[in-house]
Figure 1: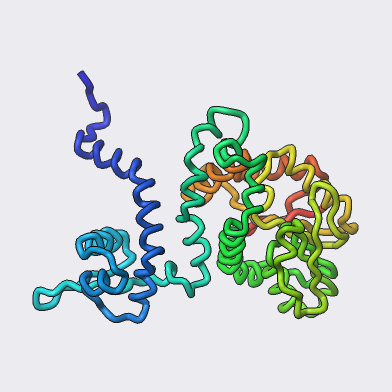
Figure 2: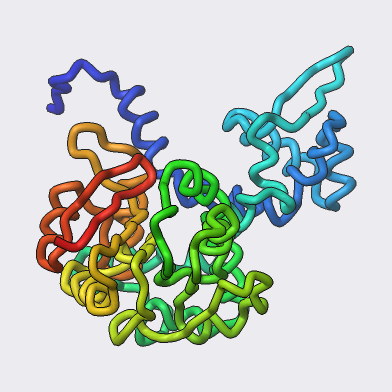
Length: 335
């Protein structure tokens, strides 16, 4: 007979199980919510009944009510009843799921059918020594999924959103005033490097470096100091005195990360600095975001988020030492 040593009731145990196995349904409900555009409709601040909303998006009233009730519980909407009539309104969180919000690209990609399909092979990544994504998605490498134009749009919009979320904090907390030539390695659309150049007129040149398939989709720079350069960070990167790796090496194993950082080291001017913006896992204070991304990077690429000690060990192999760590990232300089 089962005996619970922790005095947790079977009912509590059941609820704990349900909470931890309902992720797939929640994922798909977010996807449904965005496809219907309910947050966009309610963004004008006007309370509406579920019947009104069902009529606007042309779905059955019962289904609409269930969606609204579910996401009211999850703080996306507020529910009010006056004279027996129940209405739903936006909450403080609703705007993050509207098409006009800076973070919509993240919400849209992370709840997309593409992402759902990517996670179907998660067990394969843990049972084997490589990512399960390529076999399940019929590509040689996970990054090859960007060869699809629709996937490329998803990815670029998500990167835009992610950069929007962190760009202002980076600009306000990190001092780039001593930089003359700064290179954003894997900089995608170039938004971060553009913002840095805007704040620091003293910087002579900013280089946005990425794969050709990414660079060719970027608009022509309006700042004459900004240059888009294509190439592979496993082969060579443009010369500079400051380099940025924002959410890059978490895609790669330690072996490949050493190769990337050494490529940068070979082009870095004496006394240069490397700015790494990645999650730093705190073994004494685990956080959902860093652990979620750690699992995701492992599944997608057999990459990882790292602890401070792992970063120190990694950078030491490349001749760098950590100068300081911000909440938003770390800075390393050549020894």
